[in-house]
Amino acid sequence: MSFYKRVNKIILTGLVAVLPITATLYLLVWLMRTAEKVLGGVLEFILPTGWYWPGTGVIAGIGVIFVTGLMMENFFARKVVEKLESIIYRVPLIKSIYKAVRDFLTFLSQGNNKGPRQVVAVNVGQTGIKLVGFVTRHDLSFLDRKLGDERVSVYIPLSYQIGGYTALVPLSAVEPLDVPLEKAMQFVMTAGIIEGGKHKEG
Figure 1 (cartoon, rainbow, N blue to C red):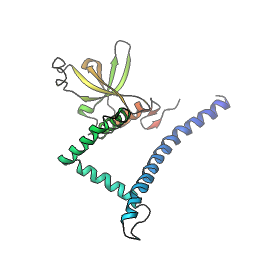
Figure 2: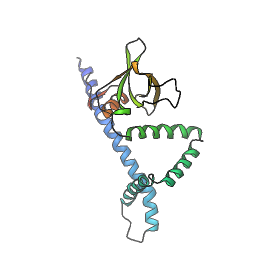
Figure 3: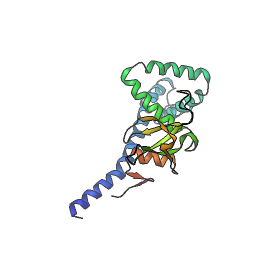
Figure 4: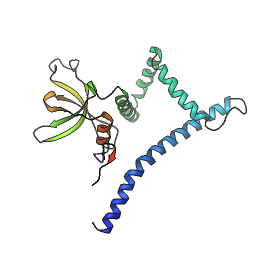
């Protein structure tokens, strides 16, 4: 390996190691600054003099998220959120972004990788190509009684972006994979660059 290629590989390896950490830290810092700026400003205005101190907005933001999670267990709170979502879904561009993020996070937050969230390889015709996907539903009779138990719905995510396809796949074209959901999702979302939580060496 030439000196140039060696240096290039080292730089790329460094980027793969640094960029995800940097992006994650940047997102966390952005969220904390936003919470501090918005909620902190409100708290500084309504709290008695001397009660507010830097970081109160971040704590308040965490509290708001926690309380919201508790409220979502209430029937009336869910109805209010559903009403707000119905308004959001009427806005052309916003609804696409909102729905993609919401569906993706909901998918990741439910249960474990067993049962209807099993990791599978989907055979693409007679080409020998296989796509990594995640079984999301076994019973598709609500769509069409003819489907019966012959097909399952499989979510196939796209690499490097939020989103993917929901395919109705014949059982004969699905092969279960013995791999945790998190590792499989990490593998797919990084186009195979990340393998088992580690950088795949070229």
